[in-house]
Figure 1 (spheres, rainbow, N blue to C red):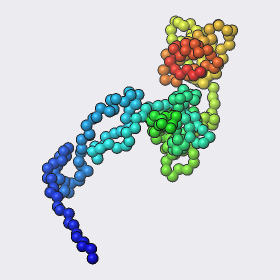
Figure 2 (figure 1 turned 120 degrees about the vertical axis):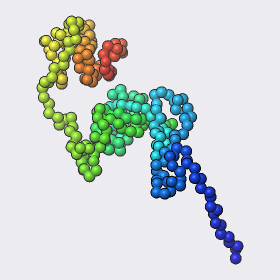
Figure 3 (figure 1 turned 30 degrees about the vertical axis):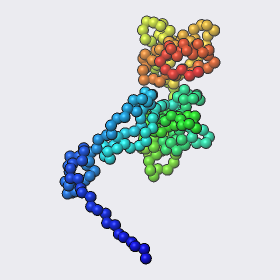
Figure 4 (figure 1 turned 90 degrees about the horizontal axis):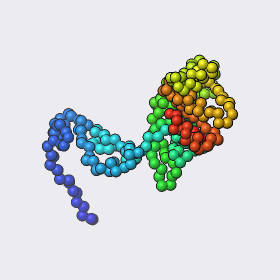
Length: 266
């Protein structure tokens, strides 16, 4: 028969000294205390974060409860864009409103979880594309249309699409009631330009108003648009201003982009 021997581990001496960062000794903690009260110190900085581009931040937080880092060390960038969904279920966030190389991929599971719809303004953290990828990938949704993203998550036990955290159903734009404009957009900012005051007196513009400028070529249509945009920006700073230029020359687009405080889409 083979010769078998049993090994008995030797007892190791217990260090009764207080561990670094703790306010009590191990003997004191064994008398009914909890080791969860131990507070560690963060590891020393290695200077790697300072070498990264300022456009990124490190998505890693130190946890004092376990004396270490939690999560993955993934460089992320704060992004925002308009959601455009695909037939396959996933979508893209368009920072420039139209397809571009700066689009951010958003998975179908995120779209379902937050009850997202085409046209929603989504803000969050995205990671750079990997070697075999073309677009940024959305890691976390922070805000939707300026509100906290958690308000759009369907509560557990509530069935049906479009249910918000409050249990209410999210209304579609097509189901909203259309009314005539009832709030004035004041354009006048002073004695000049005079066109702003003339519009306020003869053809006032309200929230939700539709209008048309008809004139011969080189009569100053672009100038009128600039002055209208300047009046809205000065008198209504909370308004989101967007200018859509269809078929305009590139120099006209540049001129309008430098003249107004808002998004210019061409």
